[in-house]
Every structure is written in C-alpha cells, then in structure tokens.
Amino acid sequence: MSRLRLGPVLACAAALTVAACAATPAPPPPPSGSGGGVLRDWRGIITANDRDRYQRRDAAWSLALQQARRQRGSGDLSGLGDLIDADAARAPVTPPVGDYRCRTVKLGSQGGEDGLGYVIYDWFECRIEQTPKGLKFSKTTGSQRPSGLFFPETDRHMVMLGSMALASEPAANSYGQHPDRDLVAVLERIGDRRWRLVIPWPQNESNLDLIELVPN
Image (cartoon, rainbow, N blue to C red):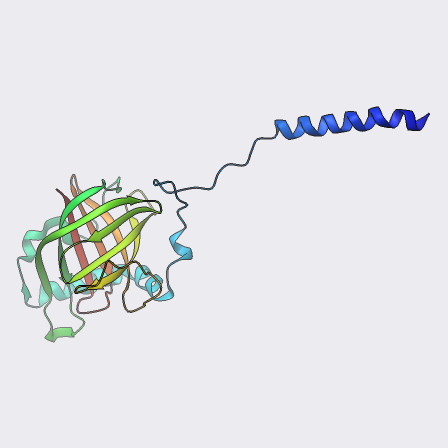
C-alpha cells in the first residue's frame, strides 16, 4: 500500500519545487559603467603610493598655493579664478563626452624656494570618450600626455586612475604596471562648462597639477 502512494507524493513534491523555482526572481546583474562593462571600485585598483597622494591632496593644495603666491612664476596667476580655488567644486560633476581644449597649470615647486612657484601652459587638445569600462580622459597633443579612467565617487568629484605617455609614445594604458608613470587625479566641475583635473603630488616638478577642461 505504501509503495502505491509514494509515486503521487513524489510527483507533488517535484511540482511544488518547480513552482517555487519559477516564483523566485533571478538575481540582479552586477553594477556596470555607463558603457555596459563592469566598473570596478577604484579602491581595489589604486596603488599604495597613489592612495597616499589622494589622501593628502588637501596638503598638496595648501603647500602649492603658498608657494605659488610667494615665489616667482610664469603666467597670470590672478586671472585663473576658480581654477585655483580649492573649494570651487560644484555638482553634478559628470562631464559630457567629446573633444575639449585643455591647459595645464603647475602649482608649487618640488625644488623648494629655488623653483618656480607656478607655470601656466598654453591650451592643447584632449578628449573624454565612452569606453566599455566607463568614461576615459586623454590628452591628445603635447610631450606629456596623461590618460585615465574615471570612477564615480560623489556628486562633486570623480577619481581618475591613469598613466603618463611621453614624447612619441602611444597613449598610456598601463595603470599599476609602471609606478613612475602612474597618477591619481580628482575631476571636479568648477563652472557651467568648465572642469578641472586635480593631480596631487605629481611625479615631477610641481606639488599640484591642474588640468583645466573646456568643451569645444
């Protein structure tokens, strides 16, 4: 008698299992960048040296501005406005994709009192493009050409991890492989159509580099 009843019991259990599985929603997909690829957290990528630079960026601002205002320099420092205001960041920060005109401003001197307190360079060409890993910045002209990937952080700044290409080298795409070329930067919007990359404690020359970005 028990053997005859076992078949219906098992069939019922199997039906309930199938029904339960059908009613269970599929797990959500992993978060992705706006280009469709998975965007990793920059904290799991950044090197120890760049993490230290990032954490000490307020000190870089302070020292670099003191030196810039005290020492001789090249260019019109007073005409830079919000570009050299440490508290000028606005929300939202995300920049549009496209071509930009950019210029680099170097503040402070790693050579102490003997070096230039600031240097303002001419405008050059750069670009922000959408990639499968997220937004990417590239300086496309000049002898020093940084490039890197943006990581969302707050509504007022994004973190960029990148590398530097020199002279006729192809665009750098090797963060973490060549420590002497690595850089960490913070992207901030400082006007309606004006952004800046803040690079604390760069590898050479200055104590703070700013790259101003204006869409074409």
